[in-house]
Image (tube, rainbow, N blue to C red; front, side, top):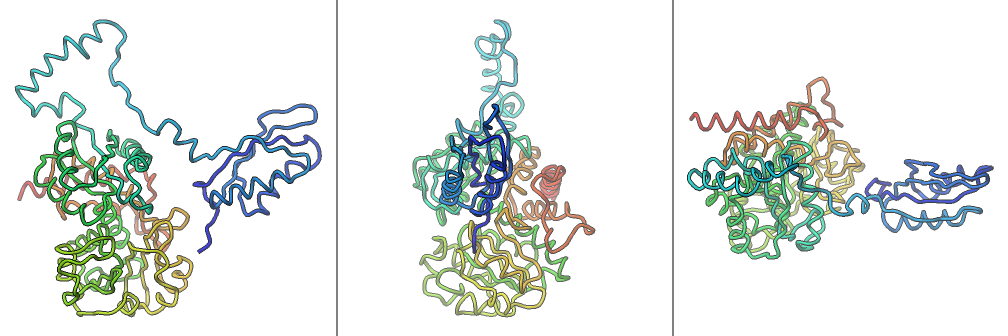
Length: 475
């Protein structure tokens, strides 16, 4: 699929141009002829015969940005000055900071916030550690923990390269749910070391958000930390994705007039996200799911089910679980073969593994969630020619499956409920809350999930999580 101009590759070019004639319109025309889009044009300085113009341009790649700039240099009378990459500018100095909630204007205030007054609070906590939620930042602080082994669609790029992503995650926590989060990028990819480090820093946090840790290690890390900590542990790549997929599928099924328990679902990808989606769909009532990975359809007779590597690095015990809980028709063969006649396709795997012709083999009213990023499993436009509802992980198509719809509200609810029990019931409740924010009168094939900026979203999800926790506690 061809890439469209995007704000992700937005640049601002400072130009000097003649103040007379059609010089400014010539700039706009040159950008458009080069395939870019002018999103802003500001005159930042002027003299009798010259203008200083800042032109903001959306391009489709770094190479495209350079090509556009090169075209601008060819315009007669125009001088190209500084070119600023707006994405890099946003990240200069980092995107988050710590700020004090109390004033420190004089010696009295300093003495209460720090020594000697703070000693009284420390002694009180030594006597009653449970008061930490009341007297410290622990009540509202989450650690965003990564080892940099599976960052976005970039792979194993390490902890330093992962830091801008974790900063962004922390900013989203604050923006959408009022949760204070801090990135912790660990310089180890050893399972036991990660578990040890997270356990060591846990006393200062109300929750742990595991992020961009590759499978199968992420499964063991999450399992162990949930067993050994008294605060919620949530792997967003697994459970955040699963929640939003279930929410989107709930509404997509309404659009096509089908029910979850009746449809045949085919998934591509048996790694962290794929397995979590599968488990949550089963918890919500799905009965007919078949999963394929790099080696084909997962079934109990496959040689690698007892220890080989599946798609995304999964294998052994987790792949065995997939084999034993899916594929009621005992299918074998390829993903494309399994897809024929299916009602739903959910991909969290690799780009361009399907074509529009493959989607055409699905049942009438087909639903396609092609979530590989940045390039989906099938071109969305090709899928739309045959499917009733299409969703992707991309921001330039409708129905973006974006984890930010889930994790801020989920953590807000878990923190407010003071619960460390992230159960399937809690995850299903969060998914249904997200789905409910799209009213029946608003629902259509291009609008099955709310905007991430929906004003009631995080609050609605948090309330649903609190209610689910209380319901479990009452049982």
